[in-house]
Length: 123
Image (cartoon, rainbow, N blue to C red; front, side, top):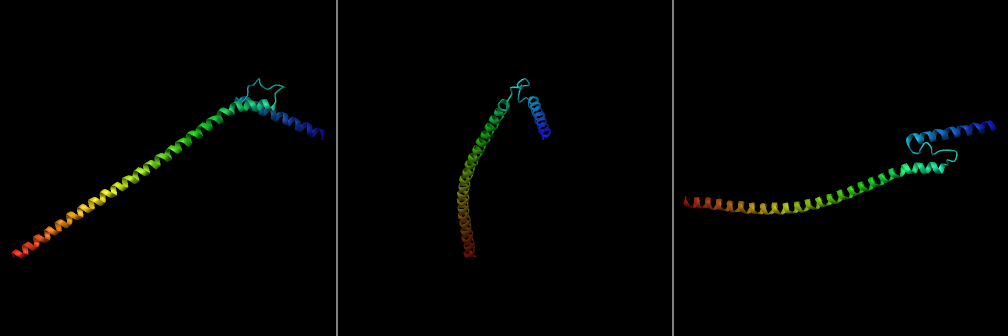
């Protein structure tokens, strides 16, 4: 049993060294930071120093994206509203033009009928 515990302890120590070497290599902690007095709290603080600016950037990016989405929604609503007003005005113009053309057609038709009747009466 004792040998098994010794092996587990050695494995843990090797993993700790690998983790420390990785963190130093990636720049998460200075190489001279870890000594016999090093602690998981010190390691966590070193990692947080590197991670906090990244989380701040992510938060700022999310806020910027939210602002853009909100502005886009507002602009879409304004454009839709303007388009609705434009459609209403175009319908008014179309209706007015249609009524005027119908009046012209009726007048022309009446004049043609009068002309035809006048020609019949002269014959």
